[in-house]
Image (cartoon, rainbow over all chains, first blue to last red; front, side, top):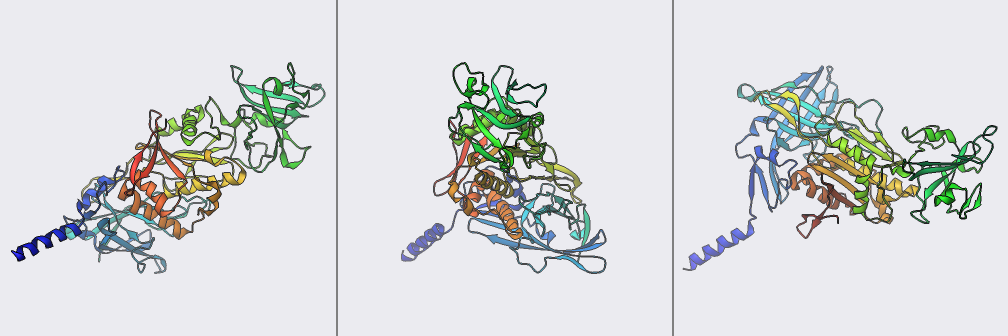
Amino acid sequence: MKNILIIIVSLSLTTLSCKAQQIIPVENAVNYRNSEGGLMGDKDYVYVKDVNNLLNKFVGTWQGIYDNKTFEFNVVKITEDDGELKEDKLIMRYKITDSESNVIEDVTSLPNDDTLVMNGGYIAKSGSYVFYYQGKNSDCGQNGDVFISVYGTNHTKMKLFLQVSGEIWSGADCPDTPIPQILPTEQMELIKQ
Amino acid sequence: MKDCKNIKTEKFSGEIIITDLKGVFLNGYSVNNGKLIAQYKSKVKKNKASLFFSSSISAFFQNSGTCQYHGPCYDGSECIMCNQNLEEVFLIAGGSTDAGILVTNIYFNGPSGGGDFNDAKETISWIAGGESGGGFEDEEDDPCTKIANQIANTAFKAKLDLLKTKTGLKKETGFVQNKNGTFETLTVSATGHNLRIPMGSTRIGYLHTHLDNFLNGKTDPKTGAPIEIQPIRMLSPNDVNTFLIMVKNAKTSGYPTSKIFGTMVSSSGTYTIRFTGDTSNLNDIKTDYTKEEMRELSKIFRDKYVNKWGNERGFLKYLKHKIGVTGISLYKIKSSGRIRPLTLNGTKEKLERGDCE
């Protein structure tokens, strides 16, 4: 009897200490964009979860050449939890070198929360993963959405492009001619390394 | 026009009154020797004078019951200022009492980008204060009344209605409004889809579109599905910062900060922001962000606010918790004209939709 009582009390305490958790499959998060309640709605705790393992195919190092430049993208999968919203998501870093191996841009050593690192996004209805991108000159239009799509046998090929948003911040001292984009604006092909 | 000198041999001196076809006063000037030296305003708001032109002008405001050419006002006076119950605001360009603004400038109906008032294409308008077609904002009106009057203004409404037809495009459309009520079309950044809002002391607000989802012509290589772009349909951190800079400029130039606005038109609704806070704290509100800080704001806004909490609630939480500004009020303007203030309520900061009476 005493053991049963202990079990009942333990179960009750366990229930009280856990927040009610709403799970949203990661492929459904797109449906909450521009929605009234967002991902949270009236919930206390939401988990955007990769229940169908859709993110794993993007993970890895991808290389390709575009406009005489070599691009290398490193994609990892992480889980972040801020106490209200828990998310399975992708993080992408990149390095760009010219034909003489001079580095044009390299964010591969930056931490996850650096603004130049593409941290998180959503799976589009088309199947691409979409990152919000900002370059060093984001204030002068180097910003937009980066789409990555994986295909081919064993998912060893990737297509990537930047859909430029081009927002220019108020007060920014930008030149009259647009700042060039350093990411490809047309779909480039990359091979998994 | 009423001349007070022999205009066959001398430059025009006298009074110019501009009215609509019903004779309702729109604008008026006192002219001396071919130069505009004062402007007339309706005496609706007694002892109030609005800073009407750019702050590059030295303007002296004087509530005068005496006409330059006809002496003190009396019943039956020939002075238009007297018999139309107007008050005179002296404009002395460059600070010199002998200076003035060439009378031919009243034929330039609207601005060409603002700038120095002594420029021949400066912003002298036929319409006083942009009050075309009725509807204007009194400084003492509450924000609801201000917004209602703004959207009733014919010129403003025309711009708003136009933008509503443009949300389905692939690039933003927008306008900036100047102190004299005129509008300038905003230009899209050369390689992108966003607008650049030119700043300056003459700007009092902007209205622009945020786009519907659109297909960009590319397809997914695995699924073959068309790729869709999904812009966020809420005022952005940049929109907020632009608005705050305009508010600060207004305070510096003596223009009512409550008249400054930022408006976003989308298929999800039309939203507008107004400054309703304490203007004595304006200098404490940060607007000079570094590049890194701007990137941080933009990133956090998406990830931790609008995507997480929804556009309206997320926006208000962003104002409160990320940039710590409590003086910005958000309103949604329905297609019916109903204006709904949006606020956060309670410890859980639920979204509350009010109603302007």
